[in-house]
Image 1: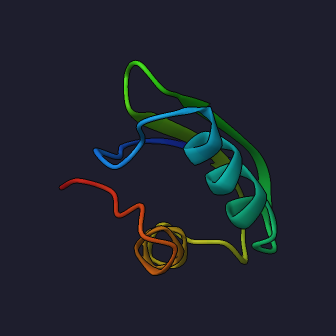
Image 2: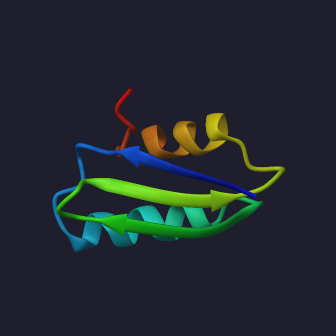
Length: 68
């Protein structure tokens, strides 16, 4: 199991967090998604077949790209 936390500057409200949770949770292998509006972060726990690359690609696709 892998846990990553991404800084996502586009998070501005709880709706943003909800959208990220709904979309990222659909990826096979993702176990949990937690968001923090104030910190503008998303913490994701996952295992194969999910990868950081797939998660980052999905975040970008839904207009919440992770900052490098």
